[in-house]
Length: 383
Image (cartoon, rainbow, N blue to C red):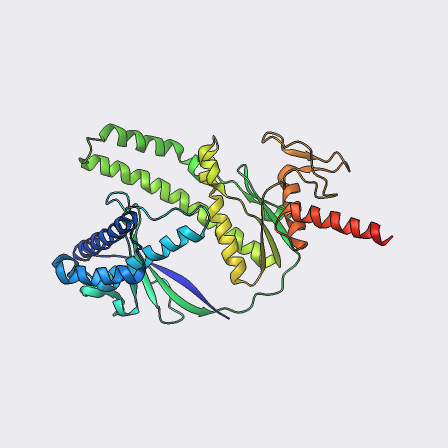
């Protein structure tokens, strides 16, 4: 079975190459903002219309002609895709303007916009960049995306196709309930993902760096060298904690996928936690990243991944499927069923409910209750 994946590598651009990349990003960012303006003016900025406007603009503007047409077209294609998703995906916002100081550098080139020669990545317009090759390609890359993080490090993400062996037959299913005190609580205690608290460990160092930034901050538009050094130290601490969290999520997701055939995942949206008192701890736990990693690995391995809606999972008994009359408060960590007397940890019980719903072929607790009522009604009529 073939799959399309990304291979990421670190780039070491020199001063000349970095200036050229930033100039290319300025042109692409200008086109993105112009497309946003067209959309807000009432026009329909489809990719075909934007491509025609780009051709006219390149004929009249020397500054645009100095850049790569491939990168500029890919930027407009990305905008058209983002605009289309904003109409089809629930909760997706429409594209907004990319500010020069806040937007991250991101350039995409198709196969006709880059080559690999003598271990270097050569982009359109003769931009040559050394690459830190950590592994070999399984096939010829079809496209590459150039990015720069908050520390100023450059990366290249190549899209390649590789052959994957079928995953070995695994055991039973597993249910996963997301939380904050424990990032992922499963039906099997051995596969829980504990909260590591990497950002909490470096909170004192981060606070010192941020206080130093506040002391050295100047008026808008003016940044001293001391402020930039302090900002770099703070960014390093954030990056270190994020990498540790992502590493733990990948190792955990790999273990879960290898040992289970059915993976029932709570379809939890952690965005509402950003407005609560648990915002800092929830961001440190990175529930969204762990969930995304688990789903992608499960789909690639051919496992059955079921997303179950979180409604009533904490109020339903995993033994008799009776529902509590009152919603459980967050401080109440033990579930007690008034119907059958079953007692268990709140999150562990929710994980078992999620697995039971998925094994019955449903995606929410309500469907299981309704199907159960229908079965009982049919049985009474038959008698």
